[in-house]
Length: 273
Image (cartoon, rainbow, N blue to C red):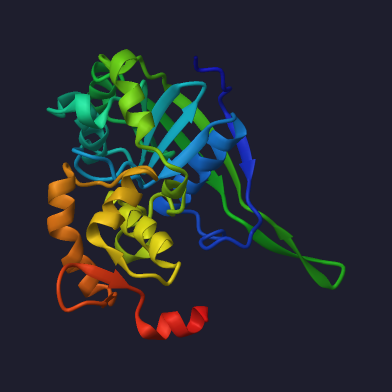
């Protein structure tokens, strides 16, 4: 199942943010991890918001019905081990799913690694990859300057083991990975990244429907959603109750004095005309 070699060497362009810094940011570590996945033919999904699961994994990757999760941090700490192992003590794996493999990826340190953390990693069946970096450099050459891009080496320090329950629950996790969940920047937090949520997906689908410029009753909207992949609400009844307020907040026009009938705002209708 684990067929990659260690160390694996990757090269940047020298144009990336932080290319000349020796220390790596979480975003840079996650970017290198994503390139590592691409190198081995995995499809990666950064910062995915999952149903019934706390937080967002830095990366989820799939290949041939195998699913793995990668958590990236600047250094190996108890916090990242706890973050990666939460899949093991999560109370609802039947809803959120369980990856087959879980990795921790950190920058390689010259210091001595904690034996306790290594024991916990093995105890939870996690894997550990460390990344060493040679920063980019600008060197004078023939009256000009040559750019030497940054270089990375990835070392597989500890191999992960198959997570308990993943043979059954991995399919639940994979089913939540949609093409639009691949838009985020792995490792970025807060306002530094854009990530897809089930709510955003529902509203984007409604936006597709409303782009026809016609008026639609909330019942028509729900019928259309259910025939085009569904919505994120538990029931149609809860969706019918909640969606009108969201449509109002997003500026859709109420076209009648009675009933929840909606259409595009007049300015958007004019743009379509």
